[in-house]
Length: 244
Image (tube, rainbow, N blue to C red; front, side, top):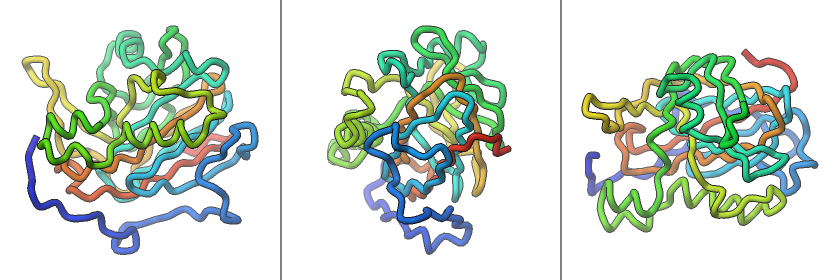
């Protein structure tokens, strides 16, 4: 990865010419403390560096939109019936015989059961191998002085601490999907973190095969050149009807 010493701060959403922020009605909270109280229809903007946790009921549609382009949405999925059953990168890659996720990809659980199916995708590639940033990876990839910087793992840990009714603990933080992130596999079997293939307004849409919890970190990473050192918002929408 490229190291940089002078990293610009995030610009405001209002400064982006392509910004499109869905309205949040009645000052509703971003996430609900009790998943049972979450309305069936929900649309939220997740600011850069923020997190979202919520319930997607069986048959519902979940859309994640990259509002400005080349942002990474690091996402975990759990069975709402038993959170010990969660998204598995190994089962997903094995069952579909492909490394990247796109339309038609089925997201499998650690018990080999479908959690969600991707039904619409205008980006065309999503990473399921590169993992999420953490204080440890900030140190290894960039510099010891970057260890303290906010990370997706920090986001997830903060979410599960704030929302205990989702019944998640530290040991539940495992494999994740990096929606909109481009991580090619090199000829020698390694991974290369490249510029994203996404653009403003690109989205991925899934249908839930069973009740699932979604835990999303809108990546706060300021050291990776793939997002121009400028994390930006994403949008989440949950609906009973297809959105594509």
